[in-house]
Structures are given as structure tokens and as C-alpha cells.
Image 1 (cartoon, helix red, strand yellow):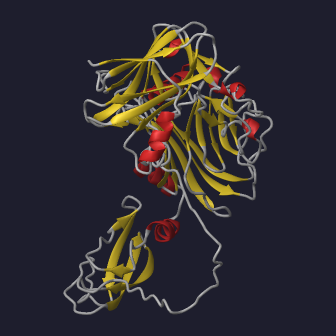
Image 2 (tube, one colour; image 1 turned 180 degrees about the horizontal axis):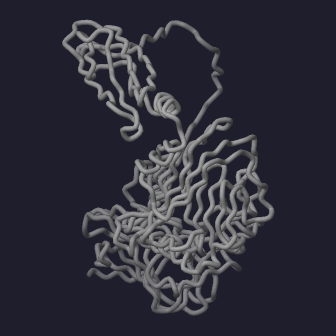
Image 3 (spheres, rainbow, N blue to C red; image 1 turned 180 degrees about the vertical axis):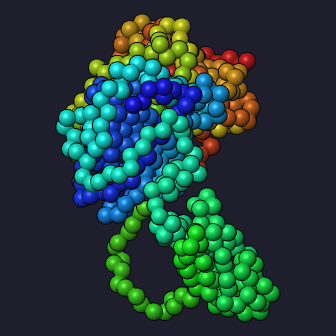
Length: 498
């Protein structure tokens, strides 16, 4: 059934779906593969699409879909065509509209390679010998609650226009016109202050649209605002047409001249609306785009305590509600360089040093082997560009908890994206005896550039809670800064200027 599907062809599965009263998020609309261990390709009732061949590639709409009505669903997966396309991957369409885009950029080399590996799984027909509609590869998952019709598979990654073409093949002219009116015809605003674009057709040209205006001297049939001196109410009427099927839809709008404010807000400050307690306080805070770490909290090192993890959200161990029951640890996340010489440790960490009762609190750290150089680019983007804001002449406080069997050194330096020095070079001398101790120093930037922190090790040294914070930070008053420096353990350092 899936023969000759490849990275050069892509694949699309399209069907009409009627979602019944199902409650299990893992119900499958379809599931193609050879068992629980994969590889496989599936789509759930919540339109979570998953491509698996050793690693998951997922696409998931940010909004839900309606139940109790027929929907046309398509999962189109574009191949990279031998790595020549700038982007490829899965897209979910609902009623011909793009509902979720899981396309992978060629610059995201890791996932781009995973996509090509997934397409390679089709070379062995046995990999897709258990292909189910409405049923999962996993025996624990319940069957799909709903109905399916006109199920199709294409050995091609259909475009949006092609998906619309397939959808319309199953509909009468009357149904196509009604779908266009219900799902595609709308106005961006009901208060109009400038010319608006009125569509002449919908559904890729399947339905034509003719517009008329109750007051063309105010708003023309082509959406142009005329010269007016006061706000006017206008009714725009759209006549949808396909063959001999027609449907009319009206929109009441207000047309406002440019010199008149479209909205007026009147605040009656002398009127009491509700009783508010004098002792009630509220705080709303949301961490988006690293607004906390690397933002309000001026720490420049990402995953400084090696505790990074991803929730096991898409595992079937999560149960029917999809709630995570575990964490996939990624202790070396955001670290680069000689990572093969970074040995992850889970015993005798700082939690033991501080007698923390919970064994999972700050339990991870790394032992870096002799001769290794490791780097941290800070809170970088998906392409892992350097993200530490380093400024010429500014000082940066570096601290680290470390221990070693034998005495050794850690040479610290700020570098740019090409690993060139952008600060002085300072060497920490770590004591032997295998006892945790906090060490600290300061680095001075020599350039204004986005940089990274580089650490070079002489001797096997365990580290945790690596920190780099600018001294010139809002809210860090002189007294606090002096207190921290006065109470920092005595550290032997050697400073060199490149």
C-alpha cells in the first residue's frame, strides 16, 4: 500500500472525519507501521501527527477541532528530495486550511536528518505491514470513536490547492458553496478606516464571489473607502457562485473617516464597580522567549546545573489523558565542545553535600576529563547561535561549584562564535580532596558581541552550578554586590590578557 514512498515523493493521507464522543487522546484516525517499536506514521483524533523511525517528529495544531460534524483532514508529508529543499516535513490541513505546520528547515540539521531517516524506512516493505484505519499499533489504545469516509493515500506531498481539489471531489456544488461561505468568507474588521481587500474567489477558485455595497459612495464594491466627513453604516453583500448554485451573505460594517478615532473609551473613575480588598495583591508572570533565565534573571549560562529535561509527553506511558509521567533527562543540553569528555554523574552531588532530603533535587553534575574544552552559548535559538550579550569593558562574575580527587585548573574565557577570545583569560585553581567548594572570578569583555563561555580543564574535575552574570545588572545594588564578593570563598586565580 505504501510502496515506492520515498524522500523524493512524499506522502499524503486524506479522509473525511466525523469525530464522535471519544475521550482518549490516543485514538487513531490511522496508524501505519509494523508494531509498537516502529517505524510508524499516525494521526490522532486531536490531529497529533507523528512520524517515528527511532525518533519522533510531530506536528500538532495549536487549536482543537469541532466534533459532531464532518471535516476533511489531510496529513501531507513533504520529503527533502535528497536534501535539496530548504524545508520539508508534515503539514495538517482541515477543510483545506493549514491547521498545523511541522515543516523542518534545512538549517535544523538534526530534525532534517531524522526526516530523511524516516523516509528511508519505506525501503523495507515489512516496516509498513500493519496498516490500520481507526486503530493503533499499541494494544492499550482504544479504537477510534467516530466515522471515516473517502479515505485516500497519495504517493505525493499534496499542496494546499491540491488538498482543496481532493476535498471538493467529494462534495456537490451546493456543499462547496456552503463550505466556502461558512469556513472561508469573512471580513478582517467590522470597523473600516481604510481600503479593504474583498476576495473575488474562494477555495482556490472553486467559488466566485461578487460584492455589492448598500452605499457605494461611502464604500465601493471593490472595498475602496470614499471621501467622507462622518462615520457611516454600510452593508456589504457577497454573492457566492458555483455552477447554478448561489448563496448570499451580508456584513454590516462601520466606515470611519481617517480624522475620526475608530473607538472611544470613556472611564468613569468616580463610579464604584466592585469591592476590592485592601490586602489583596496579584502577580501574573509568564516566561516566554527566555524572559526569566537570561532576561529578568540575568544568568547567561543555560542549563548551568545539568538538570535539563523534557517531559515524556508523547509516550503511551502517559495514559489516556496524555499527562506526562516522567522526564527524559538531557544533562548536556546547551553544552558543546568536547562533550564526549563530559561524564554525567548522579551520585554524591551537591544535594548530598547540602544534605537535601529529596534525592532528585540538583542531583546531576558532570565530571570533565583532563584536556577538555567545553562551551555554553547561553540561551540561544534553535540554530545554536551564540546568545551571551558581551560588552566591551564590562565585567562578568563567574562562579562554579567544583571538586577533584587531585588538584587541577579550569581556564575561563569569553569567546565569539568563531571561538576567538573576546575577554581576558583567567585560570581557577581547584583543590584536591574531592570536596565540593564554590570558586569565583571576574572576566572583562574586550568586544561588544554575542558570545559564549569557554572552559578548559587541566585534570579531571567535577563541576555544577556554573554561573556567569554581568556585574552591571539592574537591581543589583552596590551593597549586594559587595556582600557577595566579601562572602565569596577565597579563590586562587591566574589572569592573562590575550
